[in-house]
Image (cartoon, rainbow, N blue to C red; front, side, top):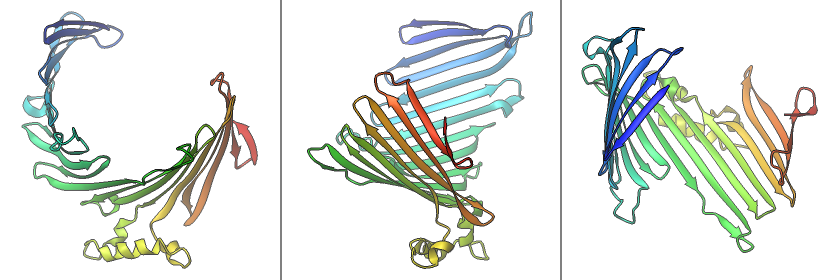
Length: 318
């Protein structure tokens, strides 16, 4: 490939030529960037061995951003298709309404739209965010039919420290829910709990437990209406550890893991154990995996990793 680029004040002109054995092509481009505005345009031509063929694709993009808003508009045209058949584009918008209050971008709102042909809407979505928590709605088609709703809640417990901050513990609970408006089998719920414990320059420990529920189709009645009482009943059964409710609940344990790192003067010892839970012939089966590694701090590349093989009942090198 041969690439040329020249900056002239706020503008940049360039070209890229692709040579054999790849398909020969030539793509001139121009871009502009100043005062929060950026724009670019390019067109690709291909060779037939003697002269230019017609242009194959053209692309353009313009965007603007400041502390309170970020917006962009992109489009593409495939010249090999007739008329508007080869046209597609997208538009995005992000708002930071509370930036003025302490330069805060934790709360923001997103919107995106993709379209094709004669500016016909293809996909549309909006979302509201607070840090890593959000709610998002997705639509499709020119009539903006509801597709899915996604919700994520990430809660971090305040870390606790002892012994002059040499020892601490932190926990997070990450939950996500996807509701499919068109497919009863497409809804799902996932939850993950993680705990980190550390003693400075001595040990790090991380424990994770995750669960999921992919059986939301069972909460519909014969008229295909969602029954929240069935959902709450199943959720209540998931906490019935001393009766039969836990066995019948569809909020199932998905995986468990524990990772331990012991820091020594010259070496680091790492122990990791994890297990996934799979359903085989209607029965839950654990798939454990255990590994141990030792690393020399002076030369980190010098390390030994072994794992326990369940079938052979022996330790093998990775």
